[in-house]
Image 1 (tube, rainbow, N blue to C red):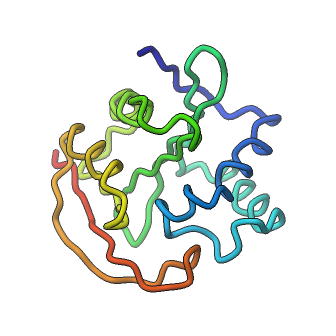
Image 2: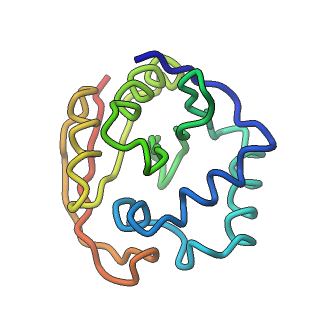
Image 3: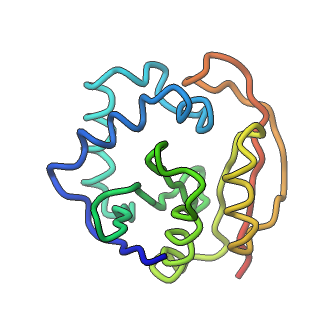
Length: 157
């Protein structure tokens, strides 16, 4: 599988909005906006992300167009990675390919990631890339409106 990481185009947030409000995707991500259908909140978030020089945001392109996004950012002093794949394309190896490519773009180590316990596919993506689980906590997931067990992963230097 060949994927390319590139800048997000101004025309693409509409597609991201649809993916980020897809019920199955919200369930898997869990830690999303309280109302995934709130377009104003979505636009505000992406405007902030795209204008923050400390954030690395890349579109994932499979040669036929946008299939997801991957980003790194700093939260509570730790550098974290996050990705979002078109729900219609889950299970095709896109997240694994994108994360593998992204790790040469984002060279900060250690690098962290968080995964809801009920998302084993994302946990496998991280494990394949060399991340190790280092902790578990229960947190309130705004997107689901309930507490969710979240696993933290770390990619060591």
